[in-house]
Image 1: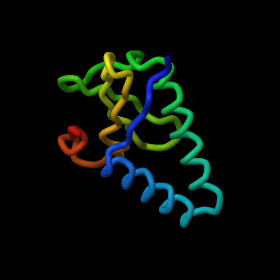
Image 2: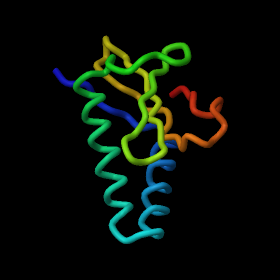
Image 3: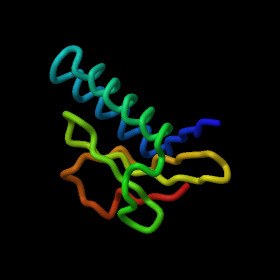
Length: 100
């Protein structure tokens, strides 16, 4: 049974804001950003423990092409992955770790 991905509200906002920003910079780039993020999220659902723990139970993986990091937690029993941040790599690192 595959894992379900849940984006916390703040992570979803970061994701949407970034897509809009990239689209404003260059037509089609926002769509490319969404595609790259979705591909990475799909990979996370297939192999949730592939990426290392960086802080307590939080795992991180960089996003190909774009300077973003996806921060998530795996709940094995529930088969749920909670994405707490889709985080620009230049931001203050402590803000990336959020709980439900």
